[in-house]
Image 1 (cartoon, rainbow, N blue to C red):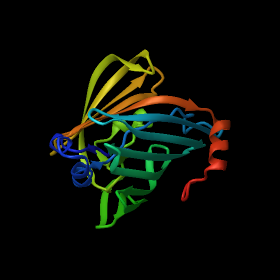
Image 2: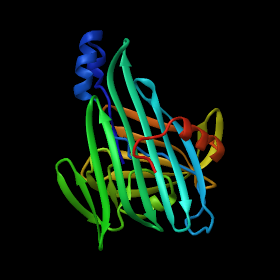
Image 3: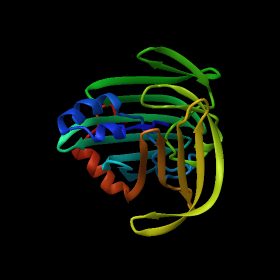
Image 4: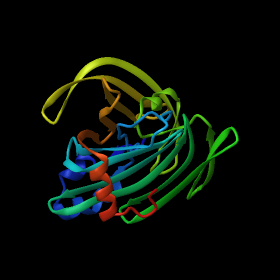
Length: 261
């Protein structure tokens, strides 16, 4: 689950030039998934292949609209491939203070993560992660070395309610492994694109840290909104509307993603 660390409130009171310089030192967006994102998809047990994508608008409690997040889920028999794209930019008085983009691919066999590949760009710095199932473990190779995690590991990207079944989380921006505590907060109502939607709220806290997340699944188990909390702000990802498969494939033909499936 990537999190948001955005410019401290003190930086906002400085001059435009100074704010732009200091912001890069205080900004860190890890979308657990980042970033959390989502998708509507056919059951992995289905014999037919299926594809779907849902797009999200990202907004910050201090800086307003800051970018987009999307998940594409492609299911073929027992194999599910989840492709995540993130594009975040924060500007202060016309100066770009923070920029993050990411492209990640998860491959699942049933309920087990068998492969992960992700590339993140943060203010000009690139981080690449590769992970693969090995025996009864999942091994992640990051810039600082290899880390072994339980085979039941989940990625911080709530594209399915199965994500809620595990207690070990891979943060896809830096490869960190964290234990998580889940709380079912019950049914509530959230506003998406001007409409009130009944949804079930879940709170996820990272044990040993002050970071936490919220995610709301509607009656069809689609995550319609997710939220990331950190000491310098709240980042909310709201469903911006689905793209049907024919539009999706037209988009991919026009704008192919390097390293995509």
